[in-house]
Length: 202
Image 1 (cartoon, rainbow, N blue to C red):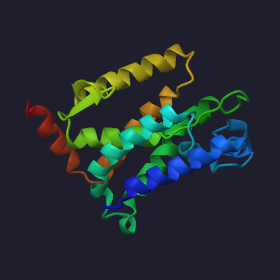
Image 2: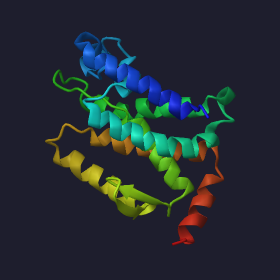
Image 3: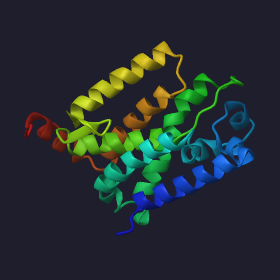
Image 4: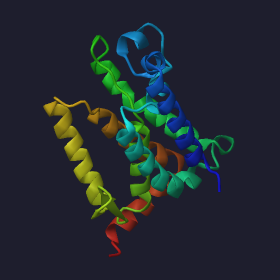
């Protein structure tokens, strides 16, 4: 069945492939604070549809495919059936705002990738099924809630340490948006999460 998760993946793959073949297009879509400050606000969204390389693209789309399909029905009743798409796009935007504020005057800062949106989807899934088994690197089994705690800790540590091309801050804020927005849209998710958390089913 064709769903909004699949639509997002198709668009992201096409735009990434086109950008790899066209450097000018790539440069127009990537998140670049000075350009944003000059009025190119579309970059808050467009950067989420291009990726650094095939592995970056594959990892994000692989994650989105499995977890997006699992949760998008929760958002279906909102915004005339387009709730999941809006949720995903807002996550990409919100996840980048702290990085923009921090690097607003930096001419050397660049960011790209769907990780903010994907993190929002992943953390929304964790709200629904905190003890579901995730497979780290597609091999190592780990409960979703344990992964979430480790993920947040690692993101905070790595962001403070610096020296990486990965935007850990966007990952963290994307995840936070996923949790807050999901609870705001469907408040019953919070007691469900607490009950599920207190009743692990191994």
